[in-house]
Image (cartoon, rainbow, N blue to C red):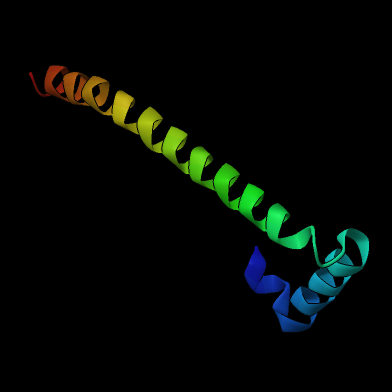
Length: 64
């Protein structure tokens, strides 16, 4: 998705964010976004790890 935006698009987004939120709020927003993304990835990883034993059981049943 980001590959279709390109460099000029990213620069435009950054300039608009700077105008809207100001330079003092941007680090806070970046930190909040990073934390949210980290928690989302952790939850996704936990969910897939929980599903893995069930898949292994199903695969063993299918092999019999």
